[in-house]
Image (cartoon, rainbow, N blue to C red; front, side, top):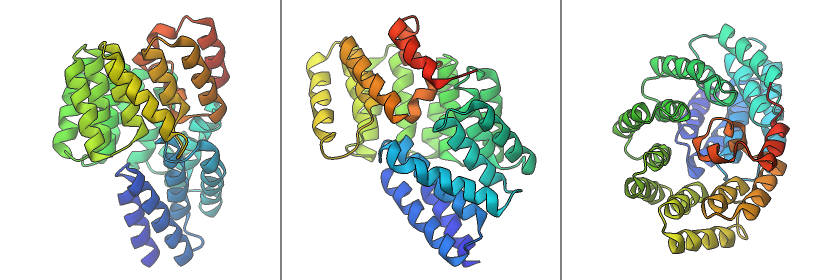
Length: 317
């Protein structure tokens, strides 16, 4: 019971998707494994927390790869029937290993073990189906995940993201509003809202969304870069360059995802620097790379030979 209580608290903090929440999640999951060394779900939680620390740019991917992979594999060893364990392993295979066949196999095992585990549907959609361009299926899985967990802020946010990838911006905007109504203090909701408004050409609303996200998660490189990109695209070059300088300075003190730097350099029209940082993102195996095929922000580069060469490293079927 003590291990279960710690595990549930870990999942709560994990679902906040903030730097503080993810670090607290690691603490709770580790305490749960101390209480019960054979508790598969606790190791699954550790794998997820370490993976998300890399995905959200809190720690360098190289710092978390081994921890995420080893805890996911150990969770499966502890309980072959655990949907949580197979979901964690599938997530590692997709986002870190770019092992698409292995990822689908593990997701299917998770879904057959427990069809009611919402995270399995959620991550199957956003870490596998959407990256491969299977967007209608991804939306169906996200709707099912939301039906299973209607109060999850991150599932609500990622349903909006699935519409964004489909370039159905009206549906995405409507889902953003629902997500913010569900949890007005959830920074990732304002991030996707900013991206949607950017694609709609409403740069003032886009900037306002990213600024709200920064109020809720100060100094987040993800949010800073997104705001800088909107400034660049709306012609506010000086503000964008200031943010770019701030991010490079911040990178000397903590990890800043090269993916975010690449995105901002491209928005500023600095193509060579953009490809330099995008190459570094591939070397780091940044999480965001898996959605290059469907993310509208990268649409203009799809035909570029340098981009295609990098994209081929993902090994997508």
